[in-house]
Amino acid sequence: MADITMYELPGCPYCAKVRSKLDDLDLEYDTIEVPRSHGERTEVEEVSGQTGVPVIVDEANGVDGMNESDDIVEYLEETYGGGAA
Image 1: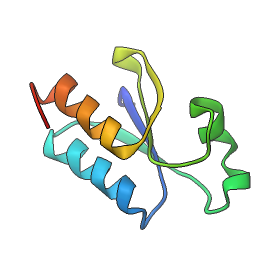
Image 2 (image 1 turned 135 degrees about the vertical axis):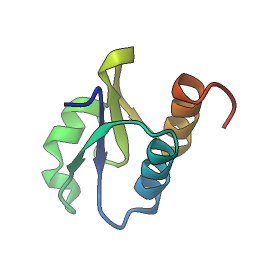
Image 3 (image 1 turned 90 degrees about the vertical axis):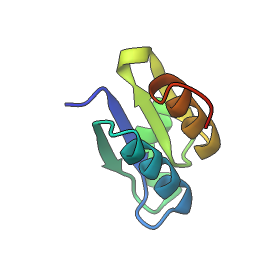
């Protein structure tokens, strides 16, 4: 199991942006596909306090439920890419 887990919805452009950064940085990660209905997204809500995606958890660095694709991309670049996005 990878340290990074990404909660996503297929076809979500914000999720694709984060997935692309994870792939660009050659990071190992697990994905959890959330239901289309926000009311059924209990797992991602427990992790992040909200039902939107993408959300990442990075156990190696104590990140529990980071949301907002731009914030996630910036975090990944700073943490794993060695600098600015």
